[in-house]
Image 1 (cartoon, one colour):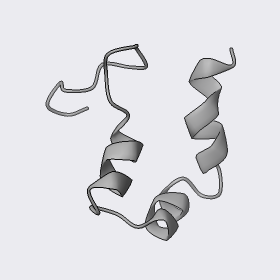
Image 2 (image 1 turned 90 degrees about the vertical axis):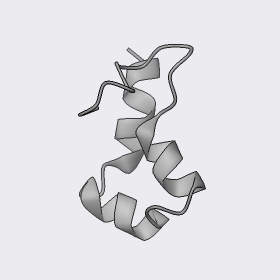
Image 3 (image 1 turned 120 degrees about the vertical axis):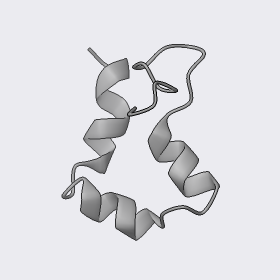
Image 4 (image 1 turned 90 degrees about the horizontal axis):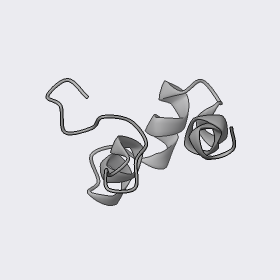
Length: 49
């Protein structure tokens, strides 16, 4: 987000959470801890409004 590669949830932008996990930047446990147990909400909220 800082460098502008991610501009929200659109059809053509990759989710930074998915990128961090797929490329091994962060483990699932680290990502879950960063969202304080609200990872599911962070992943689904933009698509269920």
